[in-house]
Amino acid sequence: MKQYLALCQRIVDEGTWVENSRTGKRCLTVINADLVYHVDNNEFPLITTRKSFWKAAIAEMIGYIRGYDNAEDFRKIGAKTWDANANDNQAWLDNPYRKGTDDMGRVYGVQGRSWAKPDGGSIDQLRKIIDNLSKGIDDRGEILSFYNPGEFHMGCLRPCMHTHNFSLLGDTLHLTSFQRSCDVPLGLNFNQVQVFTLLALIAQITGYKAGKAYHKIVNAHIYEDQLDLMQNVQLSRRPFESPKLSINPDIKSLEDLETWVTMDDFEVTGYQHHEAIKYPFSV
Image (cartoon, rainbow, N blue to C red; front, side, top):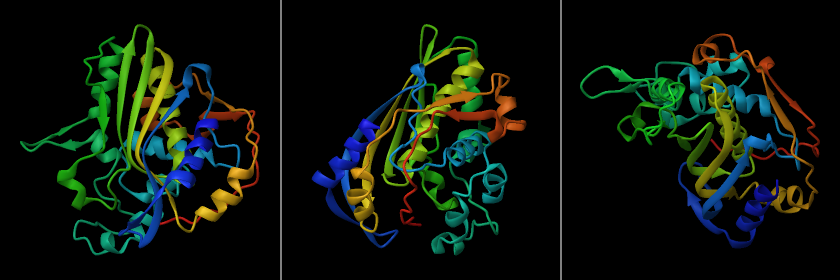
């Protein structure tokens, strides 16, 4: 919580106003933020200065792991986060590559599980990582990337948190995640939960201890219609201690994550929080 609140205060104090052409709103913006999550100590980075809905964040990550390209599939596992981008984004509605209602196109998990090769076929990046780590191999390229400029025109949104780089040191697995753009009041808590959970899950199914997750953000911002709530409500609240995340120990393989895992396989304990804050969401 301290590093999250410090970033929020830094944006308020040092941020520069930047026009955002996609949303038509201004953003108070800083460049470069680094956060560290202690997965090894199970300090689950769930925001306590407002109620945060962690299940949707984990559900979205499970959808990425499964390579989903349809908002309906995300809704079925508990994440409604793609409804607006799939169905309310006019540029995407007019895009000839859109296949119909709820279609997201070739974004996020599609790239991670089926990156199209120019000479035909596809690459399953996540499978390669799991296979290598399960054999004790770290080729310094255990990288899961959703960022494919050659197919940006075939999806409803460029990836914000675009790359996850796993590193194996002895019996401990670490993760460094890179994010090009972050809506701090709304998106960051989702992203924190996802980075933490991704490391915990991949460590569990490959048989390693989970170490630390390093989260690097390039453009961290607060939208102009969020600033008052952040400055006068959330930053005035006293944070509580971090809760703990429990993951079903029966999850032992990528196939488990692809098939039967639900949000019932995750539990958060010790979560104290202040009341929810209804921050505006920008499509």
